[in-house]
Length: 214
Length: 85
Image (cartoon, rainbow over all chains, first blue to last red; front, side):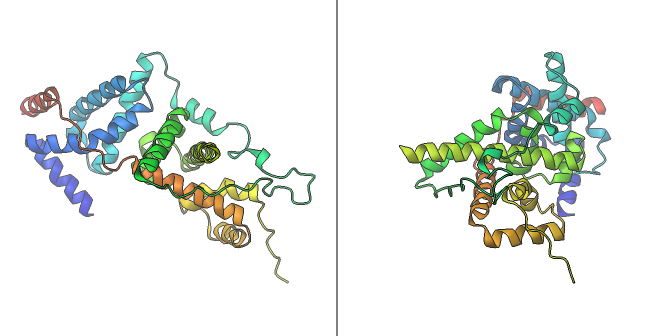
């Protein structure tokens, strides 16, 4: 409730033309918006253009915002619509429903089946090769390196999987908020998040294993 | 006699890890998942790896400084306020 009150106070300030409130709003959300827009664009300049257009689109609709969702959720919904229309104009647009269908229907399990014992084995379905624990990073530099690996792994994910994982695990949205801003159902959200997280973990595991050989 | 639920296989457990961490498993599924973990160190390791992955993901948004607010955007805001009168 506290955050709804804060949203209403901020909305009132914006509607009164409070420049400082607007600057604070933009500064607060800009880094997250750039991360979110990056999933839909070929480079950071294109992402910045999407974000700029999203702010303008939000201004156009601000009078109609009724605070049924949080201001942040509403703004991200506007951002994603703008990002999708940019993709459409760049002729890379596939309908959301097709993207979701394609990305949830990826064949096979999310975790490589070769890691498990085959069906004719006494211990079928159990680990053939046990995963190796991630060693705790030795230094801040090493942790920074791991973040870089994860960032690259996220960038390689299909767009909706990438978007769901960024919203949930980087930006801290709830599953319901993700469903609302992307217009997808809970089952799809969970499948997409699971696939994205499984791939990201596998990339980190490969990196850690390679590094330990050095 | 009550039927004992069949233990999960590891390859089923890894497919439930994300839902487990998102608290999206039913109480029964959660109980079976946790029961499996008590006897399976590799699945526990897998869960810890996924936990570390999500922790790192959370760090990607930390420490970013507030974004620049372009003068053009502020100008558009002031126009928007003036025009809506």
